[in-house]
Image (cartoon, rainbow, N blue to C red):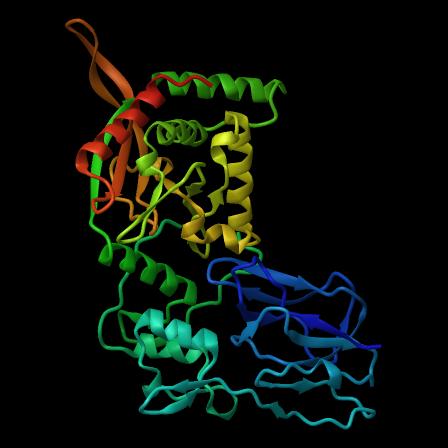
Length: 420
């Protein structure tokens, strides 16, 4: 008996995914565990494995289509078996395995989502409509490339690359299970080429642009004496090498520990700003900016204030690895899941920068590299001391400058007086 292959649900907040690449063709033999296709949410990429042996009898969607979660995308079974019952109600082209016993020709199953604007009724997928709204694309001016002229996400993407106005660009520091789709060369000359931008890059760019557009962001810079933190780092590193602890605690882990303690003392920074109201959190859900091949991801470590330093180190490592491998829970990437974010560019030698807030969060801390700076060691005696740079960007609509400065000073104090 044939079985359906569903588009998995990756997190409760994900309603649809983009079908990436088919690794098997209709008619191919498939063994349990073989990778059938890749798919992606707005941030993470995944691969779906076959649950049983069989023949790939049919595929119901093409690469690049937006597919609702838990909808059948393909059918597996024995050659000649019927798969009619598994055809989705969504509009899609069905590719059928060539077999003498299957008298089925490729056809389109109709499903229409209409835009009920006063000017024009158009066919457009829900995801494409949402993407067009976020990117400011006029859907009435688009020509759909989907079945029956339906507008799909790649049509919106193409429209944005063809717009003459410059799009917002966000700098982001540089494995995922499935690599991002290669960019398409749209135009080239003797000394240049214009490439398409991935959906994920556009979403990141739009989110950062909206953050700057919809908040009054200001950054304060401060340095903290890193001597005690560096001694603790050496201590943990030695204990890890000797097998006394299971986690290799890093400088970033220690900074995050200090930030959590500071947030407990200054809860006004552990908030979300919603225009005419503020959401105050009783727990610290720490966001950590992670560089991946697909772009910047910020997973949230829930209830971070309940964890020891080794617990924080272990959980942050798991989140970072999952983000880079592309199997992070998409729910944890929602900016609303974190109450405060830490972005560390110290490993890149950055001495000062201005991080951008992940709205609706109130603030974000940029962690910079450690550099020797002159400091008074005792009365009238100066020496060079390792100092770590701290850059706090905050929403001036939610925090006053004095509050932000006191909070940043508390982070500095926590770093200089770490007790773990």
